[in-house]
Image 1 (cartoon, rainbow, N blue to C red):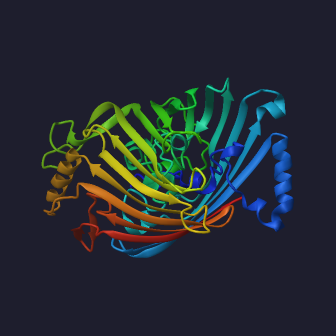
Image 2 (cartoon, one colour):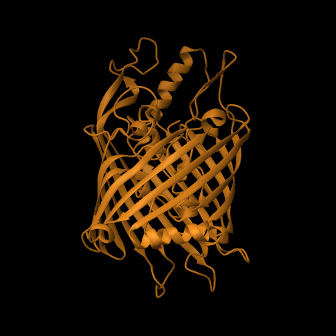
Image 3 (tube, rainbow, N blue to C red):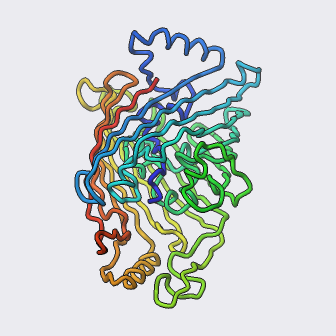
Length: 456
């Protein structure tokens, strides 16, 4: 269940305007402090500090969730996430133009509905993680011009890479930090809730093109056995020296601005390479299929792992007389990796998102999306061999899929309520659930929840 705690699924960026993940004024989004008179004094103090170079932000994500049918069993959970962030403007504080220091921490509590009741690896709970109070990111960024910026420190890859702007509207974790890197990379990669030391370079040759490149420590909790989140419970390990994870992404934005000839869109192409060693998902070091009679069950080892990906966001209709954001947009994303060392070797997701199209609801969002994760044929061979060894003759599933419908309603600026319904096909894909001594597949699951998000 690699996506069990795999992402903060930048849905938080969309719902909150980047609370805790960004600090620029034009990214900040609405705060409830500015729209509830009782908080006027707190808002004034916040703004005074921001004018002096110290900017605080926070949000709280409340997420009760129920598995209504299928999966492991029916049941209800509650997850909560409190994020506190501070950004220091180096120019205002110490006279270094273009410098910024950022830090944020999480207080995570509750249980993950996917881990406890559904059994799927593309987690239905975007904030599901081990309960903990932990440091997330701690980095310094220096802009050398409008075209060049370098960031260094403890960072998360899912904040900037492999993201879809429209995909951020959804709650299922896979629409943020997608299934393949979360399932295939050690500890799920440097993504929520595990950041890791790294360096990121961003180049903006012009207003339409960006190139991002980064290198991270490839093992967010260091090498070792057991739950990575438990090994790095408070985000203070600052692991370095492990085989690195490198990623490069190019972003091309077109039809931007009021005078554009068509509707705006973005294309992202990239790839990542982990320089560690990876187990073969099918064959052992003796050449036999893992789990088959006579196999030593010690997987072959491979040097490095490379995946490539593409993301498209495209507005297809704009509300007449509305803002640039109001209208209908679509997104699609694909990730591909070698099948001999990746449990998930092929992945697609996509969907449609409508913003502000309901009368009197200019900031509400409604969306429908689907994701498909294909499991490696070699892994299925090994699963079939293991199934035969326990007398279970049925073929394992070759994929897991999820469909999500969601509606995000703004109650007041800074406070949103978001009901979401998900239908999970083949939970856990080839996972076999032992119940009362008999093996069985997990039936398709139906999950429902209502997230409440407050930005301060």
